[in-house]
Length: 302
Length: 295
Image (cartoon, rainbow over all chains, first blue to last red; front, side):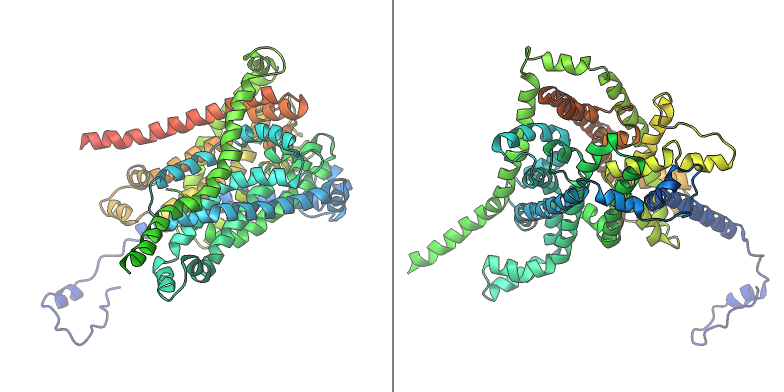
């Protein structure tokens, strides 16, 4: 331990240096290091415990969804795949209303993201590029809108849609979901457009583009990834929404509404398969979006 | 010559001033039609009815045998859930900052429930808590007799199940908001505190948490308002045995076919949410002010 490192040749050694090197160094105190290792191990254990809490339920619902009916009725159940079968999932998918509601869900999700982008992206662009009176007021309005409970909207809208004859349709659910998604869409697209330097757009205009041309040829291509992220987010919001969809539909249910309304008289295996079918998209979604997750929230929430 | 030059310039300046409003207009109209109007209409609906006077709906609402139970359950859930959830989320956010090996995987697993609906979360935990579910199976190996976790006779375990499902599902949202807040936080302050000998808890209490206040505030408001809307979790886990306020709305609308009373219950949810949000804003601003006063 007392070996002095080979001194670099160039700088002249200060006069004290040899004296220090000659003196034997005190033994290295390893306690801080050990303490740090202990903390590190503790952190790792905590992280694993939390991961188990968050991950095991997902594993168990998958296990339940892929167990045979006999296995589901057995007790005690095994916590590992003992009797794997796709019958449970198949029964679920073949139950009345499941496939149509699945299609409805996809349709509503895609329509919602189109509507909310068409209406929200221009507003996001305005917030990102212009300074104008009422800008803060508008943002506050959006935040209020986002924090309003869906229930309050759903019931009067149901009455209104009944009158307009669009109750129980993909359109009705789409409109409500678009309202729910709009604030987030505006804020996310605003943050996406802010990230595209205004200089690029100005350069486009200097070289003869119109304002819209510059937007279409310069800003739009650069903001595609962010806008895609925002669209996926909107889709998931719509995919997951239960209450408004259940209130606004009767025969043309979305998947969550279908599962919710058939819950009271559905067998256990149907519920597990339904739960799993609804969890799978979220696994994919988070996998695709994990880079964007924090950016999205970080940039949009002030 | 001069006039023709000035005019386009003026028009474009005017155009520039009007441009943001033109871009905002569709969204404002859309929100007014499908957001502003329904809220007004909900108030109207709650005070008018097919029978009785203006307060009849509210009498009916309160007279429903499960109403007060649903109020109690909702409040209890929020009061117990939110603090636990925040402690957990702060711990998770701090752990993620420690750059542990496997951090990317942890972050993935911890954020998966973010995209899980409350109905799906309820069904996921149903597979665990149901009578011959995985929890009872696991307990069986240790010789523990199966427990009827979700039976209406065991109110406390029923609450525990709903609580755990909500904790599992919604902690991710808090985590994401906190993590994104932390990313913008300079680490210099904490390092300075560490250099000057502050312990972990001192740093957390006096440096990290105050720096996180903006994101904590946003997360608290958003999360509490969402917690008041919990409904499908309980529905999936217990049927109607664990009534919640939003469940009451759904019951009045879909089950009892009375949109007026349903609107009344919805307004109760709205009122409680607004009150809590305002409460948070006041509560979380005050320390800032008093500090400013001390200086």
